[in-house]
Amino acid sequence: MPGVKVIIPKSEIERLHGALKKFSHDVEKSKKAERMFDKALRISAKPWQDAFKGGTMYRKLRRLTGGFDDPMGNKKIKGKKVYGRRVGPKAKGKSAGWRVHFFASPARQISPGKRINFSRIYRKKNGEVIKKLKEEIEKLLTNLANQNFK
Image 1 (cartoon, rainbow, N blue to C red):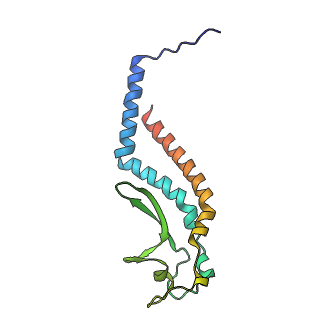
Image 2: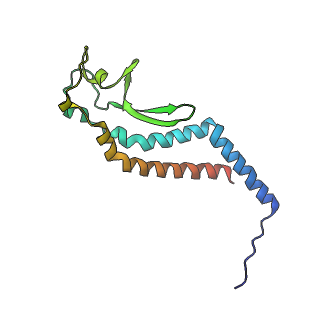
């Protein structure tokens, strides 16, 4: 069977090299790319957030204060070595947490029988979150590639 010879002009290789450099620079440095990644992460973390909607908390706790049928926020985390999302109690002022949302002052330690197993609730949604994250990152990278590799 005869071999196949592919000839790529040098100008096309240089164009691809330039596009790859621009692509990595855009993803690493641009606010637009950061916003696109943040949107993908926000959408991906939504199943964790939605797990607590509709008064899930009140099945175990008696509502004394607040009107939080949707108590969980989806907050951006950005540090020197970390970038992502945090799904947790929405902040009210400077404080956040179940005590702020569900108890009048003074807050008391919740009894063991009424504690909410947050890790179990999150764990039930892990598969859905991972699937959504994979889909969103694939869409994002395809979008960025289409913008840069024309």
